[in-house]
Image (tube, rainbow, N blue to C red; front, top):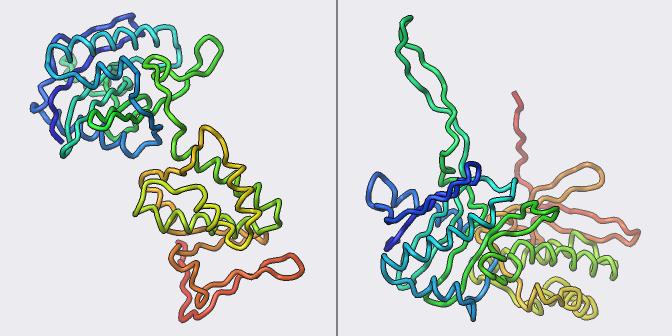
Amino acid sequence: MIIKHAILHVLNKDNGELIKSEQELEVNAGGIHEYLENFVSKFNSSDFKEGDVGNNKLLQQLVVLDNSESFIELTGHLAEDLFNAIATAEEVPSGDLLVIDYSEGANNYLAIFKLNFTRMYSQSINSTESGIANTLVRSYNILQPNSQQISDGLIIDKTHGTYWVTEGKYLIDGHRVNILSPLLDLKPKISARTQLKYLRQAVKKTADKYDIPEFKAFADVQNYLYENAQLVDSLEIDNVAKITFSENEAAQKDLIENLNKPEVGKFIDIPVGYEKKLDKRVFKLDSGIELSVPAELLKDDRLIQFINDSNGTSLINIKNINSIKTKFVN
């Protein structure tokens, strides 16, 4: 990662102070480069929403930033707008606006992060008439650690004209609203995890309609997601339907119809690192038994088999067991 420009503007709304920097950060001093790089890395693993720069004039201006003078000036204006937007929002913590212009490989990016202040204690050593007194001092303007997720941030892919945004909702004038999207006139589609929420609801609704065991439908769709998560970033909904309800064309059509929402689109995006969550599947039985099965074994009938009985119950057949181990609890 090559950082071309970086700047920090102070948004101390608690004291009513907006302090705009007139100089860029010295990114090669005191581990600052690594500190900033970790924020970018943490953002990339968050639940962000995607969008296109398109005709957004402000984003277009940010995309073409190419020198220090314009970078400082435009980010200063952005800091003013953000400060005014959060000034009366009690739930929004004070913090800093961090903007990083950087490149990775052949692509150029611009990261816009609101870093929140965190309250921490540090030691203070005082010399008194009675001797040395070590005390604790509470600091209010400490920036959040770079191991913490960004609550409000944006990365623009300047090369391809797209962006990713993550943002929280805050109570302002009696309503819970986003701050970044209205401020920057963003119109992103829903996040990958929200898409998966819609998918889960649609699969459940369709399975219930056709008396298909919910656990089987969930297992089939999650197997498909697991098998493709390391290969592609998204899956076509038509293919998801065919795999999930492979033996029922009517159910396939219903699933597609249940997912026919403008905010979902024709593809289901797979969140970054999602395959790790699917490494093991946990089945909870009404008897209280919980069963954890490695994902790659679920389709191996030689080891485990799920059978639907004619009386409406289900049977789980675990086969070819050579040894059984349990943990001794101290």
